Image 1 (cartoon, rainbow, N blue to C red):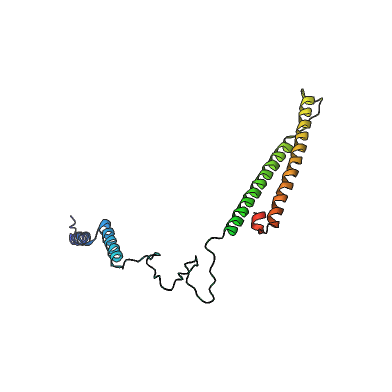
Image 2: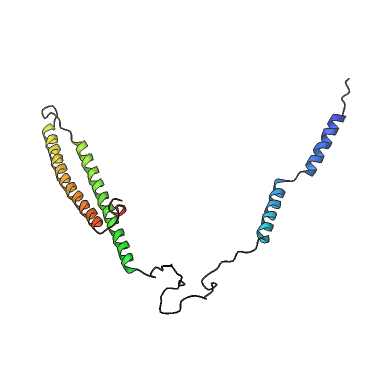
Length: 178
C-alpha cells in the first residue's frame, strides 16, 4: 500500500486555521468604519449659523429711511416693496397663463378637426345597403368640420390679440410666445 504523506494536509489545515482566526468578519469591519466616521464628525467644530440677531447693528442708518442697508458711497439700495413691479409681474403671469390656455384650446380643436377629417369616408351609394345614409352622415361631418374650422380661426385671432396685448404692455417674448 501507498503511504500518503500527511504533512501537506496538516500544513494546509494549520494555515487555514491561522487565517480564519486572524480574519475579521464583515460586520466588524463595518462597525469600525462607522465608529471612525462618528469620531471624525464629532471632532469637527460645530458650525455656527448667523441670523439677523447675531449681526452687528453698528453703522446702520437710524434715520427716516425704511431700508436697513448701510449707507455706502456708490451703493444703490432697492426699495423694500415695489407694488408696481409686483403688479406687472402678476399681470405678466396672468397673460402668460391665458396665452397658454388659448394655445391648448387651439391644439385640442385642431386635433378634433384632424380626427373628424380622417373619419370621413364616402362610399358608392348603390354598392352598399345603407350607402346613401352613410354618405349623408359624411356630408354632415364635413359641415361640422367647416364649423370647427371657423371656431379655430376665431380662437387663433383671440390668441393673436392676447399676444399683441402682452407685446404692447412691454412684456418679453417669454410671455407672449411661451
